[in-house]
Every structure is written in structure tokens, then in C-alpha cells.
Amino acid sequence: MIVLLKRLRYITVLLSSTTIMLFLYFQNSEMVLTYSSYIFVSEQALCGCHICVADQGNSSWFSERYKPTVPLLLNSTNTDLHANVSMWWKELQDVPNISNYTEVVDQLFPLFPDEEHYSDAGPERCRTCAVVGNSGNLLGSNYGPLIDFHDFVIRINKGPTKGYEKNVGNKTTHRILYPESAVDLDENTHLVFFPFKVLDMQWLISAFTTKNITQTYTEVPSTIKANKDKVMILHPEFIKYVHDNWSEGHGRYPSTGFLTLIFALHICDKVNVFGFGATSDRNWHHYFDETLALFESNIHGADFENKTINWLQQENKIMMYKGWT
Ligand code: C5P
Image (cartoon, rainbow, N blue to C red; front, side):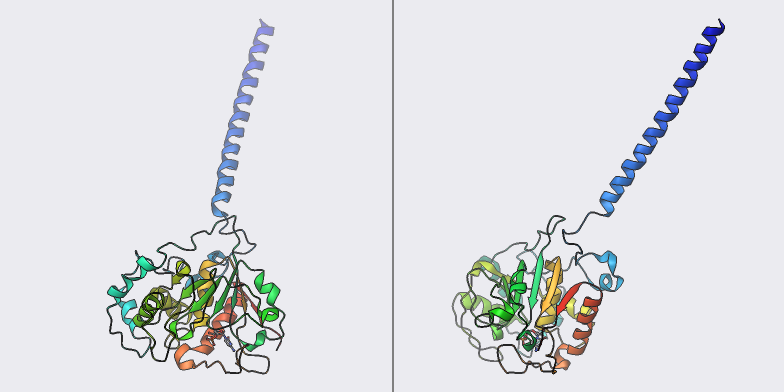
């Protein structure tokens, strides 16, 4: 009888300790599970680079300005402009907007790709971009191979590659243009069109169809060589967003280079910047001619743009390559 009682007590102790251990085990594993899924959710990478531009967790200065939901490019579903954007955008340049905006944009997307572009961000991708400005500080830099190493090489206006390959590279995936800065592109280059007035959109249509617009506030080419299926058009709301959030209202509207740089923050995971700023002897000429780039600060708020670019570098959002000359 005593032996039986002892066995019973032994079995009870064994059962209860097993129950307690099992309880603790499952409780812990749930914690582990919950904890690891928490880590998974909270650390889901925005991109595959070491640091992702769009990560708003590492700079409050940046997150106060960066708006990931802003419309980047026009497509047939987002052409309606908010009244304040429409009013502001139509006043940018002293060229009367005679034509009706809606009638003009309605002609854009039967002609050009009507797509959601740049929606391919993901934890496995590290989209590196070189934004190449036109500063003379590129001369003697030997940056060519480094620039060409990027996934996207974004060039601005007339900045040529032919004859300057050693310093600026020869790859161009995107070229930023507007009618007054138009040049011919090759088949594989995206024409990223920056419209500053309704007439600019009309020029774009005309350049690929009737070729009858040859004048804006100056003479413009009636057409250009470019792949119609690679045309992208910057959204007017994006220009206002850069003016409000990044230029903080300085100047009348942002410069093409500054717009391009902020555009790159929205389509790239890593942004390296070349050919911005004066040469070491404070010269503001282009690398391809002796014309001084005119930064009329009353128009573009150049000083403030430069300050913002320096801040972006300090906050590790971009890397500036200042050249050698
Ligand atoms: O002169 P352009 O507007 O074609 O140059 C394109 C961009 O390159 C400018 O908007 C500016 O951001 C940059 N640039 C520069 N310093 C220069 C020339 C151009 O920062 N000397």
C-alpha cells in the first residue's frame, strides 16, 4: 500500500512538473514567435542596400520633408490638379497659358506610356542612381567609370557624354528635359520631361506628331530624336512639393538640378550626386562649354537649394562627389 502511495505521488509530481514545463515551453515559444514576427514586421527592409534613402526612421529632418505618396509622374488616372497646385504651376513662367490644361493632358496618354513607373522597390533590390549635373567640377575628375557603374544614370538638359566619357561616363538611362533644353536621345534613354507650363506639354505632343511648335519664350526645336515609348512626364504637383517641402518657398520655383535630385530620392534606393556646385576656384561654368550657369537666386533660391543639398549629405541621404577642379 505504501509502495502504491509513493508511486502515485511520484506520478502526480511528474505529471504536474511536465505540465508546468510544457506550459512554460509553449508560453516562451509564443513569446519567441511573437517577438520574431515583431522583428520581422518592424525590420522589413525597404530595400536591399545598406542604407535606404526612403527610410524615414533615421532622420527627423528628412521625414519632415519627404512625402513618399506624392505623385511623381503623370498618367491618365492622376492628371486632375488640386486647385492650389493648378494656380501655382500655371504662374511659373511668363508665358500665357492660352490652352486648356485638361484638353492638352487628354492627348498625352494615348501617345506616351500610361503606366505606374518605379513601383519596383523591394527588400531584395538596391537601385543605385547617379544624378549628373553639368558643373565644370567634373573636368579632370575621372568619374566616368564610377558614374557608369550605377543602375540609373540621370543626366540633365544638354550635358553631353561624347568626348567627355573619362569624366562623366557614357551611360544615360534617363535624361531630364524641357522644350528649351531639348537635345536628341538614343533609343534606350528615358526622356523625363519636366513641364513648367501648359505650352511645354503641347510642345512634347507636337515634337512627336505635327512638329509645328518652334517658339516658347525662345526658339525651340520642332522635334527631337527620342523613343516615344520611354517618355515620362513629371507631375506638376511634384514641382510644388519640392518648392514647398524642400526649397521651403525660396525662389519662384526649384531649379532643374534640384528637382532632379529630389526626384532621385523618390525613385532610387541610393543616390550619388556628381557635377553639382562651383569649381574650386568658384567658377560656375558647364563642363562642356564656357557659358556660366546662371543661378538667378531670385528665381530658384540657389543658396537655399545648396544648403538643403548639404543637409541631405549630412543626413546620409546622398553622397556628393565634388570633383577636382
Ligand atoms: O545649367 P544646367 O541647368 O543645364 O545644369 C543642370 C544642373 O546642374 C543645374 O540645375 C545645377 O543643379 C547643376 N549645375 C551646377 N553647377 C554648375 C552647372 C550646373 O550645380 N556649374
